[in-house]
Length: 304
Image (cartoon, rainbow, N blue to C red; front, side):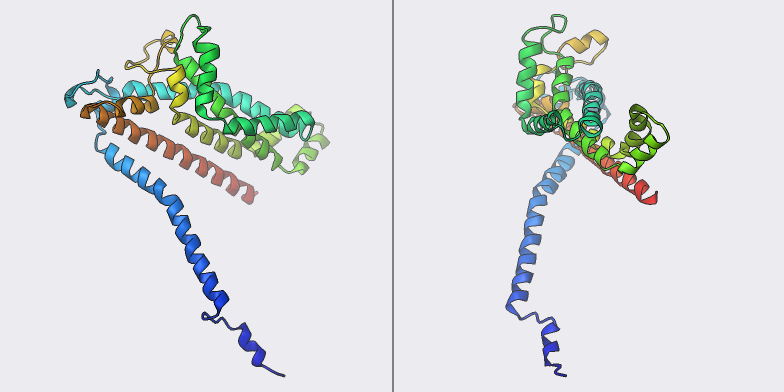
C-alpha cells in the first residue's frame, strides 16, 4: 500500500488555501471587533461621564430654569417619573393588543390571507421611523384636543410609544407560540379541553418566557425614544402630583437630554449627562433581564 498520499492529510500552514483561510479568519474577527467597538465606547463614555454627576439630589430634585450656577441646576426626578409613567401607559396598551394579536396569528388564523396581511403590516410598522408615530398621534390626538381638551400630555406620549412596541410584541408572541409542540395541543384536545382552555393553560405558559423577552425588548426600545415624545408629551420640569396631570405636558429622560444638551450652561449639560447615565442603565438592565428570562425559559424546556 502506498502511504505517500497520507501526507496530504497533514495540515500544512504554508499552503495557499490555509494562508487564505487564516487571513479571512483574522479579517472577520477584526470586523466583528469593529462592529461592537462603537457600542462599547459609547456605553463606557456615558457611564463614566454621566456617573460622575449622579447623587441623591440629582435623582429626586426638579430641574431649575437654565442658569450658569451649578447649585441651581436641580435634578432629573420628574423626568425619571415621567419616563416610567409613559412606559407603563404604553405597556398597558401594547401588551394586551400585541399578545392578543400574536395569539390570533399563531392559534386561529395561522397561514390565512388575513394573517399574512397582519404579519406584513407588523413588519412594515417595525421599520417605520419613530418620528412618524409621533406625528401621527400629534395629528389625531394632540392637535384635535380629543383628550378632554388637552394638547400635549403624558397619555398621548404613552400612546405613541405603544405604537412602537406593538410590532415587536406581536412578532415575538407569534413566533413563540409557533415553537410550542403541536403534540401539546393534541393532548389538550384529546382530554376534552376547548381552544380557549388549551391556549390559556398550555401554549401561553409554555411560551411565557419568550413572550416576556419580547415585551422587555419592546419596552427598552420605547423607553429611549425622543422624537415621538417631542410631538406628544413635550416636556415638563415638574412632578406628577395627581391623575389630572397625566393630561398635561410630562417630562422624560430622552427629551430632557435633548433639551439640556443644547443649553449653553454647564449645569444643564451635566444634568443631560446624568440623565444619559440613568437611561443607559435602564436600557442595559432591560436587555440583560430579557436575556436572563430567555435563558431561563430555554433551561426549563431542556429540563423537561
